[in-house]
Length: 415
Ligand SMILES: [Zn+2]
Picture 1: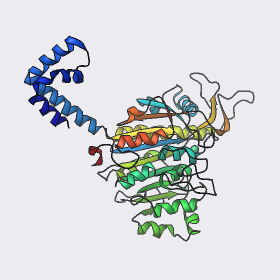
Picture 2: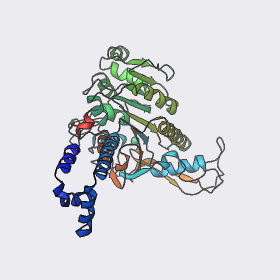
Picture 3: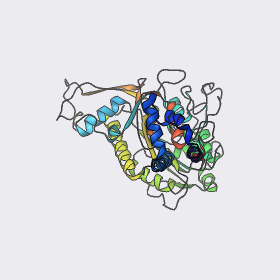
Picture 4: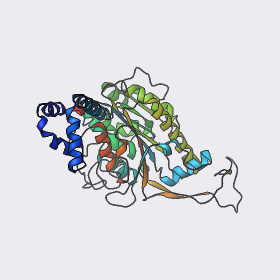
């Protein structure tokens, strides 16, 4: 389109006034005189043409080939703040607190101000808020009773277009956050029904890389539905592994499920990206790390681990990768004291003096205030201001260059 417009401009030198409106927005004689002298010289026309071509190419390359969504489950702003003080004895020292684009995201569910992980993550990956307890179905769903419409997730959009996809979590792989990426159910507790959708996906060939906890839970819950997991996965070309170390670089598709929540998130992300990045079309990866602080020290340690993994990922992925961090909801934690140079928690294995007020106070529960969204990479500039969880789906779709009906936003993105 720009090529045709340019050659028309060269053939019709009489229409400089129109072009001055387009290219030189200041009004009156000065603008017109400048525009006329500008267009009179062929060299300026050539230079301008080259700038237009270059900027068009640059804009097209700003599409994301890959999107990695890091999800701190219950990792609200107070928890991130406490983790920075705990680890660095200084505010805002987490790597994710240095990401260039940030926004505040409302996390409410369709039916409640305080969301659970099911409705929270469903909104993030489908672009629509739904009811608590529901996995990637519309708000017409009634938990445990009635289905809503199936809402196609960002992972399923990627599958439909032939990208590789991955879900990584240190929680149970059928739990709400992970499930919302690859499954649809009116009840988050139906582990068998949820995992069966790895084997019988609606879009593409289904998730390619699954890493998470809950190995026995998956085996038992699918067995009740008559599915023998290992052979069913093998038939789909998915290797069934029981440790991170057992994942082979030759695996093109893998489900690595463990009976522990403790493994190295950085190592897991590295292995997932090594497999997913073999696909020249690109990939989508969701990484969930548990940041609930009902066990305060463990929760903060896990935020630190996730932050290190985000730092490493940001340094190893190229400029074609959008990296996003957010939380599905916040948690009832408050920094109530503490000083520079003093530890935020008592030394491990010791008890704080009975009368000492803890620097960090925690009540056990989700909270409804807004959470941080932080991003870098192509499409990250859309992360600003006040958002809702459902906006993140559209931000990821736009970063890939896809619109929500499934067509590419422009011709270039369809490649
Ligand atoms: Zn959650």
